[in-house]
Image 1 (spheres, rainbow, N blue to C red):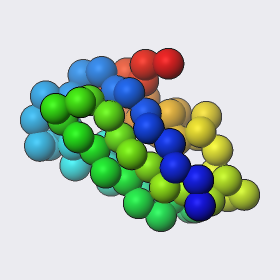
Image 2: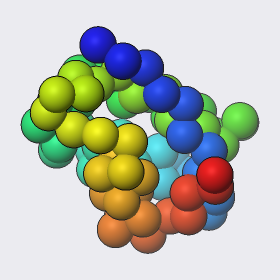
Image 3: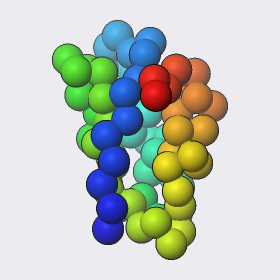
Image 4: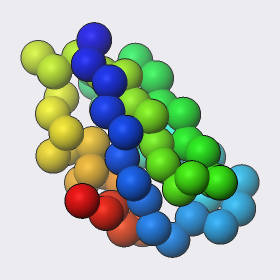
Length: 69
């Protein structure tokens, strides 16, 4: 499993946290997704043979949040 920290803009409440976590967990290959509202980050554990960082970031954007590089 690889681990990635993704910086996210636009989250302000627990609904935002849950929306991002649920969006990430819909992807095949994501083992866990833990969003921290204080640091505006998502810690994602994933199988790089099934999903890549580009797809992880795309699903966050599709959920309505901005990914910072």
